[in-house]
Image (cartoon, rainbow over all chains, first blue to last red; front, side):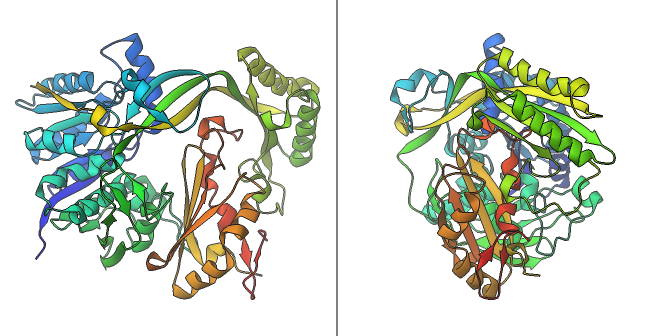
Amino acid sequence: MAKVVCRIGAGAGFAGDRIEPAVALAASGEVDVVALECLAERTLLPALKARAADPQAGFDPRLRRRLSPLLPAARAQRCRIVSNLGQANPHAAGAAIAQLAGELGLKGLRIAAVLGDDVLAQREHVAWQRPFDGTLVGAHAYLGSPAIALALEQGADVVVTGRVADSALFAAPALPRLQPGEAALAGAVTIGHLLECSGQLSGGNFEPIGGALLSAEGYARLGFPLAEVYDDGTAEIRLLDGAPGLLTPETCTLQLLYEVQDPARYLTPDLALDFSAIRFEQVGTNRVRVGGARSHGEPPTLKVAGFVERPGFIADAEIGFAGTRAHERAQRAAEVLRLRLSDWRDDDIAIDLVGVNSILRAGSPAMRVPPPELRVHVSARCADADAAQQIEDEVYALTLSGPAGGCSVRSEKRSRIDVVDGLIDRALVPTSIAWSTT
Amino acid sequence: MRPRIGDLASGRAGDKGDVLDLTLVARDEAAYARLEAALDAATAQRFLNRVVPGPVQRHTLPGLRALKYVAPQALAGGVYASLRPGLHWQKAAIWLLLDLTIDDEDRVHEPA
């Protein structure tokens, strides 16, 4: 008879995620670990820049805001915390957490920082998937679960990492308690994958057939899921009692396949997973059983994400029109911009109408009634800051020299960052643990 | 009025680098069979290519009543290279499939 060996709460699915759901999970006494994913692919780049400016920086700047309520709640329930909010500097994050815990009066807390993901120094050994132009400003390997599991086994109350596979954050706590063999491990890593986007498993970013939305209150207080993991790698996924949300086989299937390219071979550092035989079963309100994960074994290499800074910017500017005939005036303004910006190659510029077709373009459903207000949008690839300024100026110039009532202009420019993927022999990526205590 | 694909399935869009991935989960076995027959990779590509470039591959997961469409070159340069307003337009890309319509003979058409 399979038994529950670990209860894992999904505390965050991105760096800016809500704070309260993790606190609610930790305070419930119904989870052994709260895991928080706080490091999207590109979130690492500002962290690298912060670290270059200050060797004690480069972790999530939200660390104190996120952990101030979470650490005491977790401590009171003997719940442990795992997070990649160490970003580009898990070592400094560990020290910052120890300092915060001290200030909060939490004595004897053991904090483990998992190190080793930064492979910029081993860049010669990375097989990049494509050649790239520009400056490689960072290269980080996606670490797997074992280093996190080891830190927990050695008594860590908090484990903080840099780049690890998102699934590893949520799978690691179950690892040491699973039945031996790949099937149970495949199950645990799959459960990690299901939990890694927090509310997206439990009703967020989900529209059921027919279009019934959750109430505003439901979205505003959306519960984050937890998994009760069995020793055979199956699990029951659920919400805390009374937490708003929707957890069904449908929401689980959408999350299982989210950002997966080949469902029969989903690569994680721990295992190459086969999701074809996964089955979900509704076993109660907002309660789903999951099982059936299979594996093709441990991949010989780890994925590396490299950041390449390219010269130039994307300029992104908008101008609004409102009132009677707003649509005609906006269309005319868009035509004016096309004339004024005819030097740009077609591939390097987009001019469209926000409220009509700026997102789905030719795939947009037909407009039946013109909206009472809308915005003309232009985005353009620009070789330098001066060219980006020219785009912004041309949009502003419409307020004086374009159709009447051009208003509410806003603009931004984004630097051009390429993420290049590569592979590295896992033997070249040793991990270590740095401890801090209060 | 013809039903939408979105009357037969729910869906979600995701991305990794240049790759756009679209998932449909059919409401029941009959809807799955209908979508599996009607929305093959070539048909999906024909409609997606009006908006994003490149080939489309399909994976079928009958046990989950799910169809997975993967377009490896759709988001050339990734989300930061996009010329849409703001970031992450691709979160809405699933409506490129959900808003297609399907007739009595299971032919797929543009949004109504």
